[in-house]
Image (cartoon, rainbow, N blue to C red):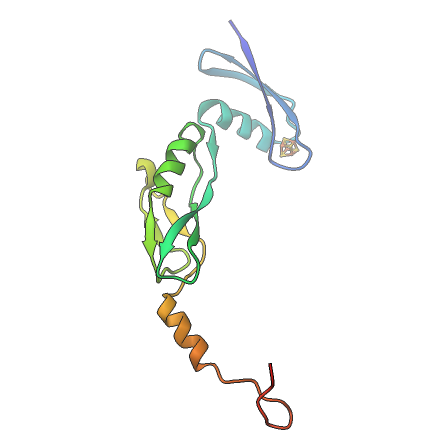
Amino acid sequence: MTKKKKYVCIGCPIGCPLQLEHEENQIKEVSGNECNRGAKYARQEFTDPRRNMSTTVLISGALRQRLPVKVSGAINKNRILEAARKIHELQVVAPIEMGQVLIKDFLGEKDIHVVACRSMKRLSDTITVFRTKKPERSKAGKPKKR
Ligand code: SF4
């Protein structure tokens, strides 16, 4: 027996209402899409729905307490909660470079990693930078009053 599933395409702001007809796990037809991206999206949602994910993790030894991170590829929608738990168990230590891999092959998915979204220096290095910065001078050559 043919069954129907409804989706809203997220490929562009139009948001076409999609209808997918299937028998068991076999897709019969996709309709309602204005372009091929919609049909591809509906098929993906039916067979293996995936989502992108970004969050923050604890970092020690840096000026800030949390480091923004993201998963480098879309992961299975049904594993989002598990993914969030695993990422939030993570604690990193400064210094961290933007793009640095923090968890390789995340959830057993090859080439999908948890990566840092920004660089964070060690706190001691940051303080050294502040100390070595020369005081601003006025046009008369005297240090500016604060
Ligand atoms: S099917 Fe095409 S036109 Fe319609 S919302 Fe998706 S991307 Fe946009």
